[in-house]
Every structure is written in C-alpha cells, then in structure tokens.
Length: 364
Figure: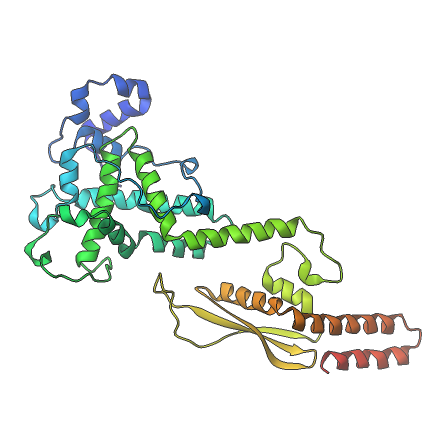
C-alpha cells in the first residue's frame, strides 16, 4: 500500500468524519496543489473508500444499447493533461503513470463487482475469464479509440507515423498498451478530480461500455436463469428422470440412461480451437455410452473454455436427441421391471436365471 504524507492523512481524516465537514472546507483548499502531484482533493480521494458491493448494479440485456455512452468529464484540467501525456515526453510526475495506477485498481474492482452481481451461479474460473475479457488492453484501447482520445495523446516521436497496433500485452510497450494505459488513467482522473461524484460517474460509464462488450454472455446467463426458474416451477414425471429439475446435464444424462453395468464416459477430443474474443484455447469433450446394445457410442460433444463446462455441454447435446433418449429409457425401464420381477420371485433358481437375462439385456 502506498504511504501518504502526514498532511494528506490529516486531510483524509477530516473528510471521513462527515460530508458536512467536507462541504464547509474553504473552496481554495479543494484545489490547492501539493508539492509534486494533483490537487489535494484528488490525492485524498485516491485513498478514499472503495465502492461497496451494493454500488454495483447487475447488467440487464434489455438496458444495453449500441449507443456510445457519454464521456464523463475530468474536472481538473491539469489532471486531464496528465492523462494524455506519455512518460517519454513528460517531466517527472506529469505523465499518466500515477493516474493509470489508480484507474487500473478501480477498473479491476468494477469488473469484479459487476460480474459477481450479474453472473450469480457462474464458477469463479469462468468469472475470471469474463473479467479478463473486460480489462485486457485490447478492449480498453478499443474504447480509447471509439472516443477519438488518440487525437489528444502526447506521444514520443517513435509512436508517431504509421505505427501498427500490437497485442497490447502488459510487457509490450506498443501503441495498444499505451492507449489502454491512457484509458485507465482517464478513468482514474474522473474519480480523482471529483471526490463527491467521480466514482459513481466512472462506474456508470464503464458499466455501459462493458455491457456492450459482453452482451452475448449476459443474455446467455439470463436464458439459463429463465430455464432454471421454469424448471423449478414444473412437476417432473416420475417416469422421466431427465425432467428432474436442479440437475446439471451430466446428472440428468446419468439419470436418464444410467443403470448397473452401463458406462457413461467423458473423453477429450483433440483440437486447436481458440476463443475468438479471449484468444484462449478451447476444450472439446465427447460423451460415450457402453451399454443398451451400444459400444463406445458417441452421444454428444461440447466445446468450452473449461473441460468441465465442455462435458456439461456434451451431456446437454445428448439429452437434446430425444428420439435416442426414448430408446434408452425404454430399455432401462424393461431392465428395471425384469430385475424387480426377478427379486420378487419365490424360486431362487428362476430368479438367478432372470437376473442373468436382465444383465444380458443391458448389453443387447
């Protein structure tokens, strides 16, 4: 954690006592510059409280539009100049670096909070992938250009001319990385220049931008929630295990076609597919059946960023083949009926014979 000068700490203590005390401070104190940085209000706000979880409003696809959200203002002209000044052409302490450091922290927290409140049942690993989609340099640099911020950028001579955008990796000081840094600096400056409303304005702005970026994922989450709610409101038929609510696709498939002596296996299917948005490798998994007259029968395949999710997709695809599922359900029912009859038989020898018959049935 960065240490503050004693004078900044005292000012922070005064601010945290009450909003009323803050409003009574003379106007000149709010803009009085410190020795080597932005205004007093800006430096105090850098260490002010972070947003609470209640401040993050879940996304709703119905509220997402393609219109570019209004750009929030930076109230301090000196901070705005610093946002667009590359450290290669700035005097010490007058570039975007400190503001980028501040904005980076708030952006990471904003993405985390919004994803946590929206994707309520999404595993942590997938949440991390969604967050990476939002905070990566390529995404932020794209926002930077959509607002034509590059026209304000003050860059070293080597950045001028027909310089191509790179991948924007954190260790890659190309134009994409620089534009992403400046965007983070802008976000930080919006917060730092307005202690009263900066955080709210910045969060509202980035929420709207990010909603456009992951609208498909948000809609998918809403469809899953609606399907789960619908399933919970239905009464499944006892004879149809696949209709049981609150089961994931793997469990539903096992309940539908599984039985003693029946094997359902999930295996990797080799491939070199990558996610178009994240550039991360994708896994493909197939679900195979041994039993009910089948040997290594491929029932379905699924592709996802995680093997577990790919397996669930494979099971879901298998369940969608309702014609084939009915065949296996009928064989399973015949198996269970014959087994029950054998267990109720009074003749042990006959029961043993029937038991062998139903075992053979499973593999006919």
